[in-house]
Structure formats: C-alpha cells, structure tokens
Length: 629
Image (cartoon, rainbow, N blue to C red; front, side, top):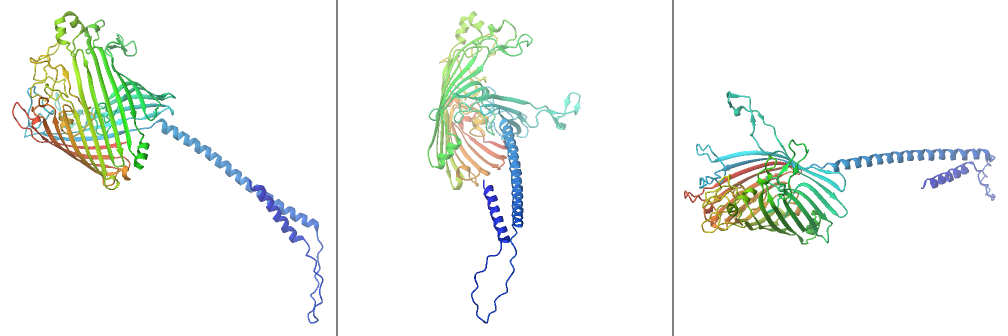
C-alpha cells in the first residue's frame, strides 16, 4: 500500500538533487567597499545553464528509480506466490494428516502378568462334596503347596472416525490371557506314544478373540449406538466393562441405544439388549447364508433406562481448581424378561418343541450411584438390587409338562430374588502435590439365610439334599452343611423348601483384594468388607501439580465377614484379615510395571467343619508389565 508514496518521494529527492547540481550559483550581492588594506577577490566565470543536460540527468535518475522499484515489486510478488503455494501445501498436508489421525485412532494395551500362590487351600482339605477352596496343586510330593504361572494379552481397541458424526469402535484380544508355557509343540519323543515336552521349542497357534464391535451416529436429535459393546456403570459392582489393566472379566451386550441431547446438564439413555435368541438355524446345509432365529418367544431381553449428571474431565478440573464442589450422580433402571427358553439345542427338524422350557422370568435391577469431589477429597458410592422371579429354574421340557402334571408341579416351583449390594470408596490427598492418599473402602453383598455355601458358584453340586429332576436329567444336590459353595435352591428340604436366591454377587471384574474374594470365593457375595488403604507417590499427582510418573507405594488391610454362619464352610461369620502391599512404576510414555504381595490370615469362617482342621495362612504374589496406548 505504501509503494506509490515511496516512488513519489524517490522522484522528488532525485529531482531536487539534479536541480541542485545543474542550477547556476546565485548572483552575488552588491559588494560594499572594502578597506583599503584588503584586496578584492578575483571574479569567477559562471558557466552557461544547459537545460538539455539537466533534463537528461533528471530522466536518468527517474529511470534508475523506476527500475529499482520494479525489481523490488517482482521480488515481493515472487515471495508472496511462494508463500501462498507453501500455505496451500501446508494446509493440504495438515488436512490429510488430520484425516489420517481422525480416521484411525489406535488404543489398547500389551500386558504380561505373573502369579505365585502358596497354600491357597489353607491346609483344610476338601469339603463333603469333594471340592477345594482353590484348584491344585495335585502332585503333592515333598510338601508341595505352591503354584506359579504367567499369562499374556494384547488388547487392541481402535476407533475409526469415519466423519465427525460417525464412528466405529472395535475390541479384540490377541493371545487372550494365554498361559505362557502352554500348548508346547515338540518333535522329540521317548517312544512312539510319549512326547517329551521338556524339549519343546515351539508353541501352538495363538487365537484372536474379537469381543466387541459397535458404531456411533451423532444426529441433531442425539446419539445413536448399535452393535456389540461393553458397558460400565458407577463403580462397577453391577455392570463393569473390565477395561482395566488387571481385569479378566467384562460385561458385553448386543445393544441398540439412543441418547437424546442433554437437558440442563442431565443425560438420558434408552437401551435394548438382546440377551438370548434361543433356538436358531442356518438351514439344512447352511443355504440361508446367515443364522436365523426360529422363534421369538424363547428370546431374552433387557430394557434399560439411565439418567445421569456427569461432568466432563475438563469441567471437573475447572471446578476443582476453583475449589468448588463436583456432584455427579446417576439412576439406572433395568428390566430383564424371558417367557420361554430352549436351553438344549437340537439339530433335528421338528423336534424343537420338545426342548421348550417355560421360564416366565421377570427381573428388575435398579442401581444408583453418586460421586462427590472437592479439592483434595473424593467419595464415590453405588447401591444396586435385583428383584423378581423365575417360573421354572430347571430344564423341564415342554412335553414333560404336558404329559406328567405331577412331575410338572414339583419341578416348576417359582424362584424369587431379593438381593442388595453396595460399595463406597473415599480418599483424601495429603502433602505437597497430593503425594499421599489415605483411603477407605466398604462393600456389602446380601447373603441367603438358610442356605449353605457362599452362592458364588450355584452350578456346583453339593453334599445336601437331592433335588427333583426331570426324566433323563443328571441328579443334582444342593449345597450342604459345611460346603464351600453350591446351589442354594433346595426343594427337597423336609422343614421348609428354600425357593429363593437372596445373595447378591458383585461383578467379577470388581476386584477388591488378591486372595479371598478374587481367588477363593471368586466374587464378593454373602459378606461385607472394610478396607483402609494408603498410596504414596513421591513425584506427586496431576491433581496436585505432579506428573503421575515414577514409583507409587500401595498398602491396604481388609477385614471381611459373612452375614450368616451357614453361608460359610466353617459355619462362622468371620472370614479373615488380608494384607496387600505393592509398588508400581510409571513412565511418561506410559510404560507400567508393578509387583504386589498378599497375605491372608483366615478365621473360623474358612475352617473345615468335617475334619476340624484350622485354616492356615495363604500367600500370593503378582507382577505385571504393561504398555497402554
């Protein structure tokens, strides 16, 4: 914009210079008489003024300045063109990079985990149904009470961002918890019939376990989800997706869901889950090209409605930095139903009707959670329940019900459910950069008064009363006095039939310890626990200005007790006191390593009432190496 003014100024300066050089000198003033002693200066001849030469000089200077200005304009024009091309190229490169990054976002982790167990059976032997607290060891020579193993998993869960409003999610486990050292392949033999596995140098082929694939569509009305997906709610005692580095389980549902736009900070979601499709077919020779459901009446469904008020991580950080309260909460209402069932599949055309069982199952599962946070304090709590009934619990076939009403009456007693469970977690940060966390956790799962065994493995046949079974069914016994676990239903009881299941079972992905509930009982049920803990990270945490890297020390102690004496193998409420200690190490590029040790001091609730043997102390150790991404 200033170039014309620069050019005009240059012309003015050039013209003035030329005029100054070419113009004749000014006429001298009229001389005054000088003193007699000073002689007058000699007169100088004035050259005549040449107008042609003056014009030529002016034009030459103007030409030079014009050429100089033109060269500068060319240079600046070329620079602008180059910069514009570079900007276009950079913009295209950035857009292509954004498309590549957004289209494929890899996530997941690589994990190796080792375990060591000692005396996990507590030296108590088997119960009357010949079951142990923990499987193995079985060779039993030289006082062998130890077991060790290591497993491996590569979890790959990428996101395909097709567009801003369309996404596809995927989860697959490669070598899913494969036991290291399993599937040995060897070409060496002691004889033609006996492979010598100690010379094995190859492994059997691994597997890829595709677990979840689902899509997301963002519309003007809300968000639409469909496919096979994981599900997590609250703390995870009822629904837990198992997406933690040390998890083995996880809830996966075939779901269609819709979540409208939020209203005053609240989110609403409606879910329809297909739990079971019953009898299916692909045709006589697979000619249908797909699996087809034979009947809708044997399908199982879950309908869920959730209402939540949950802040985003950015909103939580902003409120905590401003020393404000963060209150989040949610309400979940589940309804599960299945009118009929075909538990035994058949491939014989026309015989499907004989396999039908009347379930008449209606179950309601309400769940509520609340999360309260302040600058250095946190409290999370969840309370859930299961209520309802199942009309027929055994595989009593449709034809049996029609042909033998007496047997039908005995085998189709309804089963009721009245279960409660809850958990609370709280901690407070102390020290600089929130380096120290003092925590406390409490959990409780209702028991089943009048039933024997914990109830975490109801499929296990116990030492109690034999149950009525349909013709051709294998005999089944309810859990008996002193059994570790088994079925709680006892319709053959002489005093009063036990036709209810009231023990709430926590989701198996909700881990609270290393030995008792995780490995011996296999889940929190029929008991309560209290667990104080301490976590110390010298480098601090992000919440207090640290970086969440380096070492962290973890210490905890947990006391647990059953609600009813008869729910334990020792017929006593106290279960034990467990101590866990561990240390982890995290780097800035997300490498994670950890080692932990657990010690269980069992109480009378875990003794063997048959032999009278007191339980002994159990030990466990675990290490984990992981690369999350």
